[in-house]
Amino acid sequence: MSTPLPKWVMQKYAKIWQELRDSSFDHQKATEILDDNVSVILSHLRKNSWLEINLNPEDSRKRIYRLKKPEQIINEMKQDGKQ
Image 1: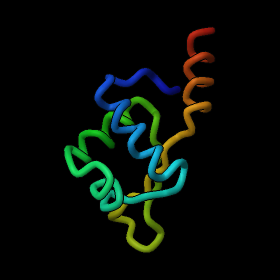
Image 2: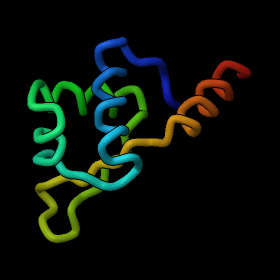
Image 3: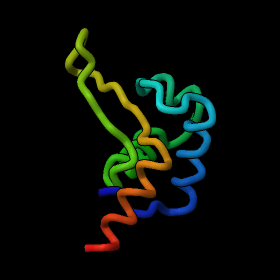
Image 4: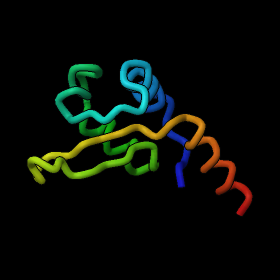
C-alpha cells in the first residue's frame, strides 16, 4: 500500500512523472532528470510504495524502475484508510 511522501520527495516524483509518465527507467535516466540525491529519492519512493522495481534482464546487478500512476497511488491510500 502506498503511503504519503514528504513534500520534497513528492516534488521529485512529479518531475520524473512529467518527463516519463509510467515508462520504465534506470538509475542513469533518473540522474539525468533529477541530478541530485537520486538514490535517496528512489529509496523514499520505494519505501512508500510509489515505485516498482524489477531486475534488468540483461544485467541482474542493475534495476529497472517504474513509477506508479497517481490514480493507483490515490486508490491504494483510500483503500488503506478504509481498513
